[in-house]
Length: 125
Image 1 (cartoon, rainbow, N blue to C red):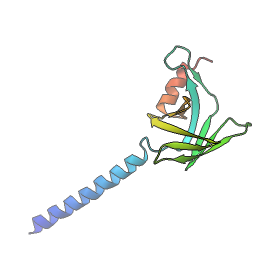
Image 2: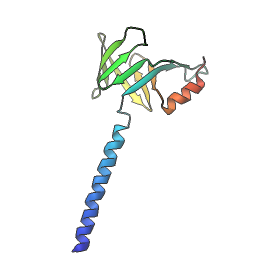
Image 3: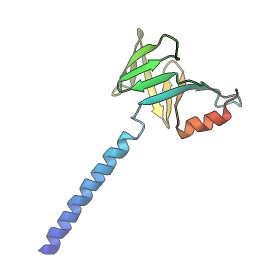
Image 4: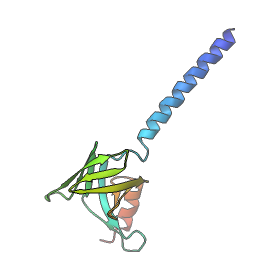
């Protein structure tokens, strides 16, 4: 009887540990948009351009597009529908491996990510 109770307790604790780990890893996955993103293009060629300043800053459900000193476009971010809504337009987005792609064909990389570091080495300036 003691072995059954002990076994059941171990099983329940294991389940809690698995649930806690899966919840924390999902918050770090591709659904976490928050951060600063730099515009880039030319990755497929030998001439990569990576913006020096962040082009988009996302905090919570708000995205601000534009460079410091310029007027910025403010978007509401709908994470369920994967949309940026603002400035009289709606842009769909995808986020994969810290690369944010908008439906207006602009591509951004998350500051400090491995992909950002890779592109910075290839930057042609």
